[in-house]
Length: 214
Picture 1: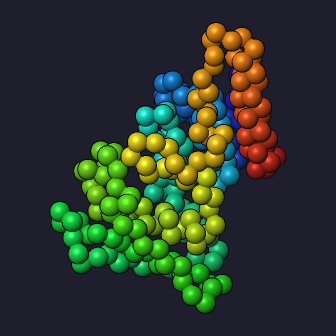
Picture 2: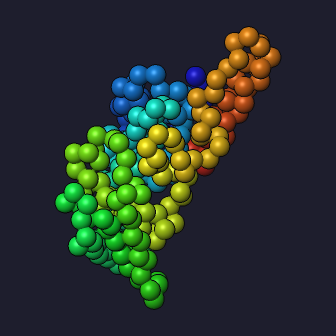
């Protein structure tokens, strides 16, 4: 697909990496749709996050792959922000199976009088993903840092990965339908939906192009 190749080329230029390296990275995910690839490329180019350095990645869900910013990506965004003035973390003394019931993150900005304080509760954000089962404290810490940084630094919520156990959340309607099901018994419907998907991809490519510095 020409639009996808253009998006890969532009993103590689923004990140100053080789086109073939980025293409190879995308190829490792079997069955990934062109629209999901475009979403990943848009996320990478918008925030200048390098997938080859594990700053942005794809999360496999029941509905398909979902682009998200890794903790390394969040650390990069936090530390490079010109108004970032520090962070502190605090956790609950009350435990559930030896895990704090909540963790709190505070981010300080040079241009704000009061810091941004966010608290995340284990029962509300814990999922069935293996990472949450194997290292719940680390995942809770990552989650509260991500949410605090999202609000403190103004990072778009729609680009943030979901935490629902069984469904994708925090996504725009277009992203929720990226795996558009075509009605095989209705050629007109299939053509219409294919055209809709092509339009959505074109819109994402235009967004990547806008971030591309020539």
